[in-house]
Amino acid sequence: MEYVNLGKTGVKISRIGLGAWQFSEAWGVTEYDQAKAIIKRALENGINFFDTAMVYGNGLSEAALGKALSDLGVQRDEVVITTKIPADFLNPVDIPKAVEHSVKLLRLGYVDALLVHWPPVWHNYPTSMYAKALERLVNVGLVRYLGLSNFPIELVESFRSNLSRNDVEVFQYRYNLIERWAEEEVIPYAQRCQITLQAWSPIAKGALTGKYTPDNLPRFDDVRAADPVFHPQNFSKVWEVVKLLQHIGERYGRTPTQVALNWLITTSPVVVPIPGAKSPAQVDDLAGAVGWRLKPEDWRQLDEASRTAVVSYSLYYIERVPEL
Image (cartoon, rainbow, N blue to C red; front, side, top):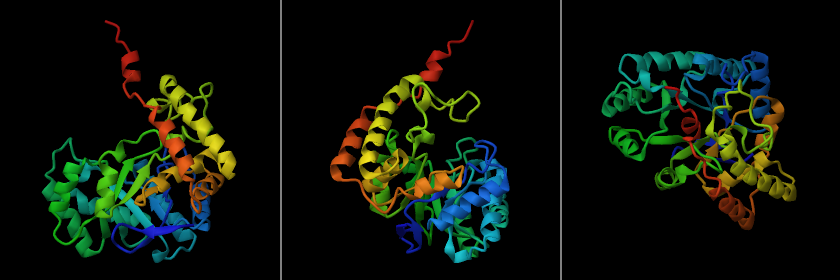
């Protein structure tokens, strides 16, 4: 396993992390023994960086992660955990209550990095208010570092300007080979400010793994079914990238998943993918994405091919013509 610094902190994190959204009803890993086996295999592969959130299973993900780490006898300084607080909780009453509950579920004494999950657009909580309230949690020891998820850069700047002693050390944004909008503003900003960027959906919810084909798309009861990436019109373009991932992977003895993840970490030194896994075997596949690098010509070929696989997010909307 490779390791890099978390932001500007000097704390070492694995070059690939493990996302924990799958420990919820949304993705179906609700049995504790299954979750424990996945986390155990991650640790065996040298993964020490785990991401969860308060809304994942309404605490189920945090609870499963915390119990598994405890039952496996993991020492506190052996892992780095990020969790996320939802926008609805960003007021002075809810912030400390919610974070104390997360710390209790995680059984770790404190959270390594607390990220705001998304901006509070429904309640319009002032940025200055929740930035200062979150910083107080660092001061009292419930949280070590702060981060932001899915924030526009203008709001990132506002948040950072309201911190007195700390800084943002972690970002989290959607970023994968076919959804590359983070490259426009977010990744350059993260590189300039030495902020670790956790890439969520780094294999496009499985679209880049080779598991799905134009004739075998997710079933209607799968959480992926309504994702625009899997719309037949979009996936026909995505499929061309998947075939190239397979072709390049054969030359390296790697899977499409490993090539797609390696492309991300080759592209930027601050990007740390946080894919999920639903089995120990999938964890092994993810861990095989590091410890090697794509050759420049292979990286370029994927770069060029992926630029033609433009995802249209309005297709499902356009097709649903209401009956009047």
